[in-house]
Image 1: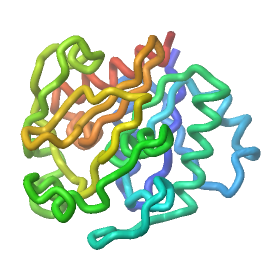
Image 2 (image 1 turned 90 degrees about the vertical axis):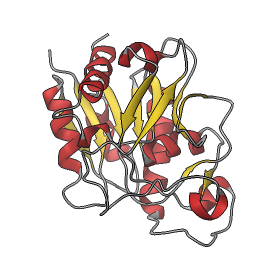
Image 3 (image 1 turned 30 degrees about the vertical axis):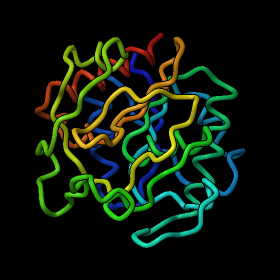
Image 4 (image 1 turned 120 degrees about the horizontal axis):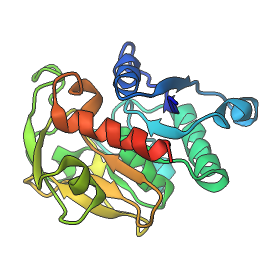
Length: 232
């Protein structure tokens, strides 16, 4: 059986294809979820999903985590934020399917659970290195390493304590919700992955494995492991 994997739609033209291809290559059937004002018309479709991927894209609106806009904030799409937060309410409350957040998707998982974001990492944490390498590095090129927490689910998936990842984000987790633990960090201390405790797979990563999955073994392992969770 090929699990049906819902993927939230991104505002960046063409980028959604990478998520869909990575899911298909790992043995799943990708289902792109459109942004709508109310979830009710989608519930019959959502009921067919075996897993959910929260994709990357625009900055999360600061009001979602009770902050005013700060210098360095870039494009936000409040309608998308509202839709995806409602989607998480539904999926986490009315189902037991696995959830994987990628880049913005990881930040959204944290915000949904009461955490917050650095609106612009370089301005708010000047000791960090450059994490936004759009237009500088190729999408599939590793930019820095991340160290995985011993005993974490992600360390088990990747079968190593350190991997090389790409980097295309200028926001990052600021306050981590108590609902999660940080399970990977960049060399400068930025949180690169989170996991929820318990048997249900709910995790987020800050990099973009869908851009690397064609040739990168750790990225392939991640999508295969996620699909395996979705088959349970």
